[in-house]
Image (tube, rainbow, N blue to C red; front, side, top):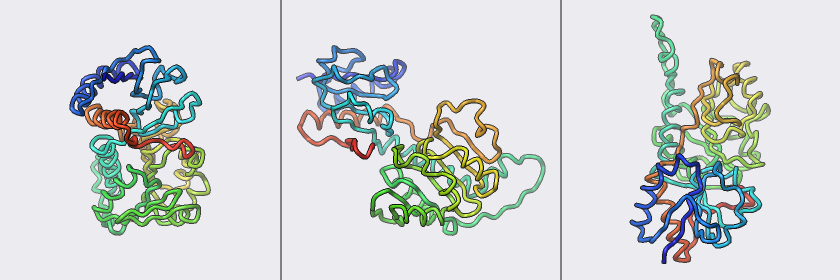
Length: 311
C-alpha cells in the first residue's frame, strides 16, 4: 500500500529534501508517494517546517503524524488545529553532532581566550595562560538530547560539567541539578554557561537580571538554544558592568537579528546566524522514514512532543 507523504516546508527546501527522503523511504522498505501538494484528505503523514504555508491542520483528517524538520516546536505546538501526533527532529548523526561541534568549538574559544589573538593582530605580544579545562566549570541549562551530548563532549575534554533541568535527571559524567534551588547552585559555579533549553512559558527569560547576578564575576555565556531564554536588556547591562565577560549568541528573539540591534556592535558579543545545529537532509530523512515505518507498523513514534510540556 502506498503511503502519501506531504512535504510542507518552504519551496526552496524541496530541492534539498526530495532525493534524500525518497532514498530513505526506499531503504526503509516504504512505498511512499512524496509530494508538495495533495488533497488534504489523502495525506497520511506531513513532513513539516513551522514557517511553511501550512498553518491549518483541520482538513488533514487522515494524517497519522506531523513530523517536524526542526528540533524546536515552539512555533507549532500551540496550534489548536493540530490534533495529530507531533514529533520533533532528533538527529544524532546530523543535528546533534552539529550542535556538539559548535558548542565545543566556542567553549574552547572562550576558555583559551582565542579572541585576544584573533582580533589583536596589531604587533603587540599578548601573553595569556588560560587555566586547564579541569579548572573551568561549565554549566549547561537543559539536559535533553542536545544538552547531554554537549555535556559528554565537554566532560571528555576535562571540563567539570554541571547540568540543570526543570525535572530530576541522572546523566553519567555530569553533575545533575534541578528545580529552583538547583538552578541557583548550577549558575553559581558557571564560569561558562551554555543554554540548551527549549522555549516554553517556564523557560522564557530564564536568564534575567536576577539569575545573571547568580553567575560568578566574569562568566561567559553561549546561547545556541532559543533567543527568548535571555532577557536582552539584562544581558547588555551585565556585559556593561563586567559581571558577564562575553556572550556568544546564535539564536535571537527576532531573526535575522535586526541590523541596528546593539548585539551587533557590542565588543563583548559574538553573533552567529542560527547555525549551531541545522537540520541536514541526508540524516534527517532517515529519522523521518523511521517514524513513518513505525506509524505503519503500529509502533510508538520516536520523539513525540508532550503538548503539556511544550517539547
